[in-house]
Length: 117
Image (cartoon, rainbow, N blue to C red; front, side, top):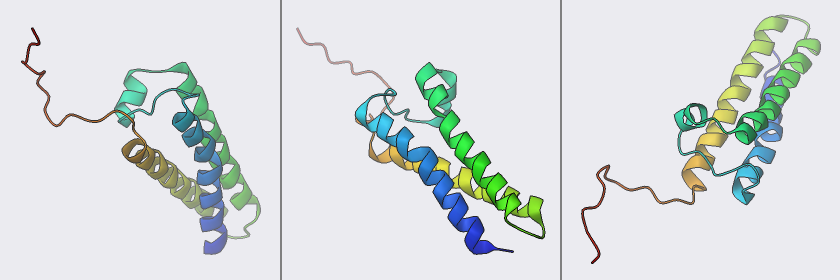
């Protein structure tokens, strides 16, 4: 197997796919950073869902690139590249949600009972 090709292709796919997405979240062009992945899919924002096209396209392109540039076990190497790129993309999005989230999280789920009068 060509591990260097697989790792470099997956890293580049994750970087090229998530960097514009993370910058869009940071500067507020796409919207606010979702706190969890379930929030991303339960409350769909058209801008966020359309921005996920870029990571999917880069992962697909990297898998095809690896498939075309290997001689043996093509499908296996393309699949490994896609899975590694997906894991790296999710890790980058999760790290962004943890580090760059601007709203502070409350540690309790009950509303405050204080009344300002």
